[in-house]
Image (cartoon, rainbow, N blue to C red):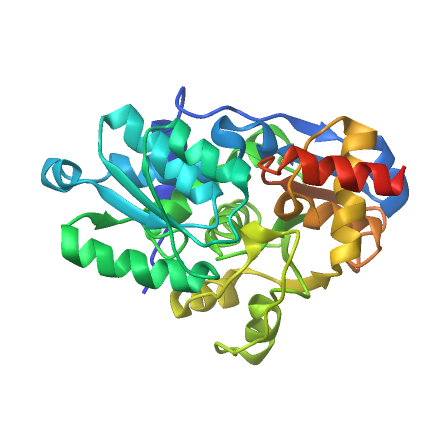
Amino acid sequence: MLSVSFFDIVKAHKDLQGKVTKTQLLRSDALSGAAGADVWLKLECLQKTGSFKVRGALNKIASLSEVELAKGVITASAGNHAQGVAYAASLKGVSALIVVPKTAPETKKAGIKKYGAELVVYGDNYDEAEAHAYRLAEETGRTFVHAFEDDQIIAGQGTVGLEALLEEPDFDMIVVPAGGGGLICGIATAAKSINPSIKVIGIQTHASPPWYYSFRAGRLVDVEYSDSLADGLHGGITQGNLELALKIVDDILLVEEEHVAQAMHWLAKEHHLMVEGSGAVGVAALLQGAVPGIAGKKVLTIVSGSNVDAGKLAKLIARYE
């Protein structure tokens, strides 16, 4: 049972001062015009390690005891959470073991190694990598740092929303990439505590839609997965995050892979931003008119990460140019 509170997010916000980047909140004239709304971007793609994930990782590792720190930490991740944990562990001088699936982009693997963590590549998807990481945690005594089903992780990720709302408190809606659920649950907790009428909308792709179907069913639903540009959102979700989201998230929507690719190109062209597929799904939804009820509203979308292989992004840009 997850029990993260607004107090936890406020405390995390204080504790993370000076350790994370206060990322830019940017009004996008181009996206506002395309969407027919007042649209702002929260640029977590400019965060340390290239994604919001470092917030939760720093917050979690700061909560561990000296005994736990001495034994080291372990995690499984598609890449961004792994880099966050590796970075946070390096600041504490703590040993970190990271398990990633075979599908993890090379740029994310390189980032993990850059921060001195030990890298293990295992499994065809996140779920297989996670199961292996749990086995290794039992064998080694390391503390498993879950990517999203953890109060301290969610509180850290929630500082993205708190930070934005402290700067611009009158958003009507926040559009959030939905992967494991740490970011959307954290942002929704912060946002609803500040303004209960604000709408929080999650975005996934058709290639990895567990949130979409589980949210509508009110229970965990098995879905089919396929390859996705939004690799950071790929994989299953947990009962704890679903139960929390059902209380505070307003809806989950899906976008097509082609629209994610177009949004990555659009962000590079319009705002000169290098954004991974996971970070572009909110922009994709807004460009396609897939988010209902936004006409004339003030809307925030989270551009959550920049860790995309340069070659892949170059090919997308060339395609649409």
